[in-house]
Amino acid sequence: MNEKMFCFQCQETAKGTGCTLRGVCGKEATTSAMMDMLLFSVRGLCIVTNLLHKNNISIPEKVDRFVLDALFTTITNANFDEKTIQRKVEKGFKLRDIMIKEATKNGIKIPGTDETMYSGRPDDYYEKAKNIGVLREEREDIRSLKELILYGLKGMAAYLEHAYNLGFKSQECFKFIQRAISDITLKDLDEMQLTMLVLETGSYGFKAMALLDEANTNSFGKPEITHVNLGVQKRPGILVSGHDLKDLEMLLEQTRGTGIDIYTHGEMLPANAYPEFKKYTHLVGNYGNAWWKQREEFEKFNGPILMTTNCIVPPLPNANYINRMFTTNSAGYPGCKHIPADENGKKDFSDLIRMAFVSEPPEQIEKGTITTGFAHDQVTKLGRYILNALRNGKIRKFVVMGGCDGRMKEREYYTNFAKELPNDVVILTAGCAKYRYNKLNLGMIGNIPRIIDAGQCNDTYSLIMSALWLKQELKLDDINDLPIVYNIAWYEQKAVIVLLALLSLGIKNIHLGPTFPAFLSPNVRKVLIEKFHLSGITTADEDVKNLIS
Image (cartoon, rainbow, N blue to C red; front, side):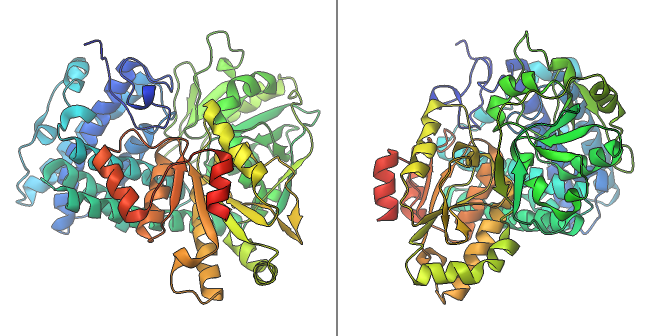
């Protein structure tokens, strides 16, 4: 056996079964081992905190925050910095032990499991990791359902961390995450019980997305339909990638009046549609495309790059931008300076600003504009036109094409699918999957664009709210009776929680691609197909015929 690791949490996992030597994402086997140890420490911590919750004993805020950060750290393409992850493992064990003392003080008995009793030193972590990873659960279907829950929790933690950074918290969601992790660690749950927990995870995922929507709109206003510039200016710039809007706000404040321009990248594109960000005249547009093209695009940007979250592609050894790339929050990469927050959540971006002053302006890679800002508030404002277009036959159907993009050639399917849609079909999108088609000239239906971009992956919440509004306006009993079909791309764990949220709402007939997740066992896949009518994709031609007819 030459296997050095096992990870199958993302869509590009090796051979469609699992990465065993090195992650397709670029994660080394030793980094994977340290991530397994981090999740091991989280399991032990959550066993204790769940018992404290049950006994109405409050948990320190730093514990809730740690759980979110640890889960987010292990999301695909978030953190490649092994030493940083090891420090988080040590922190997890220290917090666990503090919570155990609190439980003991209150007469609460802690189960004597490996997760609660392990006391090894950092030198022991790599050896310990061999036995506490994904394959520790030998029963394939049980393992599949537990991993499905865990990956949903990772996606949920990402959304909750963004909301947390804006001062919005949900003890209800924090408690659920800790209970779910404790239950899948301690309890001998059968397939039916785990399936119910899968749906409950989706329900809480929807609540997390609602909280983030509230956080974003209360902080920055409700998104407006906005035409975003794709070209470049003549001044030096800083590129902001990832998902975190609070980081963008702080950077914009610190660069105001400096002569430095700020550009969004990837999933940060929708930031341009928020009213509060429009007051910053040096937020000049969006540079580049989806995350997987960054090796080429970061080379040409010339200035510093801030990675606020996941979606890091490891730079090639000869890349000219490795010293220009900075990380923050749960993101990390060896050789990149990490920007921490102080005790008040503030960050000092002066290193990026100084670097920008001596950088050349970005090289132009495209021109024109792109339209975004169709959150649920804007869709309901267009409601009269949408309803009229539906009733007079100008709009036949909507296709939800949200989710994630990736580098596989098979993902050209989504471009072809969008091109082949009839002219009376409107695309609803959120997430970076839109970069496969959002620059196509698909035209308008009256004053309604045929590509309606709600924003980031978490803004799938807006698509759901728009669907619920439409269901009410059309006086339908079942959301599945709407003229909406779902053809969703996935890549990592935030897409998993979006999928689970849709399933928890009873939405059926979802087409998922470009492949089914490797972590779904044949039996679990069968249940999802039979109970929820989940299916894969075929060819663009066939799927357009089947979905739109």
